[in-house]
Image 1: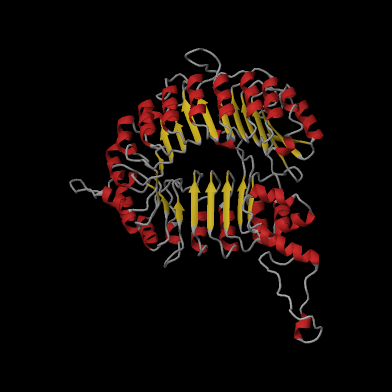
Image 2: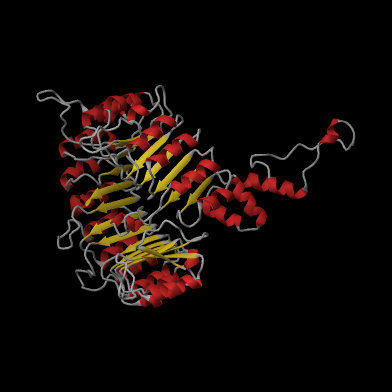
Amino acid sequence: MTHSGSSLPDLPNSTSTSGPMSEIRSPPPDRVLEIVLENVLHFLTCRRDRNAASLVCRSWYRAEALTRSDLFIGNCYAVSPHRATSRFRRVKSLTVKGKPRFADFDLLPLNWGANFSPWGSALADSYPWLEKLHLKRMSLTDDDLDLIARSFPSFKELVLVCCEGFGIAGIASIAANCRLLRVLDLVESVVEVADEDEEVMDWISCFPEGETHLESLMFECVDCPVNFEALEGLVARSPFLKKLRLNRFVSIPQLYRLMHRAPQLTHIGTGSFCASDDVAVGDQEPDYASAFAACKSLVCLSGFRDILPDYLPAIYPACANLTSLNLSYADVNADQLKPVILQCHKLQTLWVLDSICDEGLQAVAATCKDLRELRVFPVNTREEVEGPVSEVGLEVISQGCRKLQSILFFCQRMTNAAVIAMSKNCPDLVVFRLCIIGRYRPDPETQEPMDDGFGAIVMNCKKLTRLAVSGLLTDQAFRYIGMYGKLVRTLSVAFAGDSDQGLKYVLEGCPNLQKLEIRDSPFGDAALRSGLHHFYNMRFLWMSSCKLTRQACQEIARTLPHLALEVIDSQEDKADDHIEILYMYRSLDRPRNDAPKCVTILQ
């Protein structure tokens, strides 16, 4: 099959069989259709549409594989690297996800897996033209990063989100060898750094001299000092740099110098945002506000590590143009937030700590009429603490921010009335994650379960695809989800439900369910068996501290051989048949061979 970019050959006007034109032949009719199809498929960018196209027939299956340049692997164990690279032979951009999300909460054992090394070797052999690599919750080493740096001459983009196992040496290799690098984003990853008595490698100085192609550089999670002079020089010779997120070792005076070097920045992560030793006692501090005023294109602000609220007025000149503000590391109160937020009329994304209280949320609701995403994180997660945000804040947000599409809201108390109000005021919600800290908490006003609130969300928010439930919930809440949550793809459940019937409602009623996360709930074997018809359509199921037995899981494994069922127990020789964790996912290949001893893969 020819390259997908080929076009139909010009046909001769003459019907003569002699002369030079006689050498041109029309392609076979079936080949013409393949060429046309390949050219059409190039315009199909949504991976769900491409997946559907590949199922039409064998010729569409082949053509879709040959024209796919952007490949997404939602689970690194769902398909082997060899199978993926054998089918998709012209990939330039690859995304691979590893561990399930509950790994973020230390619910997976150490060294569970999701190692990048097999993927790295396969990519180096099959895709020498690879340009982009995005990894999430993967384990990779410095050697893996060095392989990436040396195997792909045209490599331009590396994004590592919640990854681990690598250190400064690996980052340095990427910086030194990827001369066309545009994006180097290290986001919430665990980067191994030198001990206190060891010298820290100067990875910033490893970037080549001369003008760079850098467009985005994020290293908030690299918890060690950087060579600021080298960083300043790098920023100065990166005219295309738009996104820069700094770690806590970069001070606000240093940020001031960087911003004057790069006034074209659109996204800034500020690093440390407090008084600095860089300014000698008695010296006048720089005019930080002038730096923010000079960045006319600035639309996204984050960082604010170790914040001293006295410095917040520096960002006032930028507030009017901001569409995204992340204060999730800034422990500020309502009075400190208000002067900032009252100037942010264009804001669409806001992340804050609950230290802003309901009063701060009222200021957000009064000002940010175009808000689409809100996340409110807790400063204190202890159950016995009375939280600073409540149903008052949630309801006022629903009244003032009616374009809201996504919300993550941590609180210690919530009422059905407030949740119902949000379902009516914000019908365009796609993501609703309400995390009531504390187990089995009812509506504090009525002492009733939170069933009606979550029922209203799935009934009134017709576009909902992601839902996280909490508080005191009976099977009735899950009945509502099964009846009305027809588009829900991701459901997270904790400390909820009465019986197996609750999970049955969900598994039998949610046809688009892809990811199901359950912990500390009373669902058992009968509930698990009720999903037999649907498990092949799901990406994964996670159940921890539920009422599952090994026997039931073994039955599922025998009935559905293309499912991988991983049973994770902290004790090797358990007396009873109950399991601690079940992680189940579909897989096209044989069970993985890198599982630790505490993981048993049922067959």
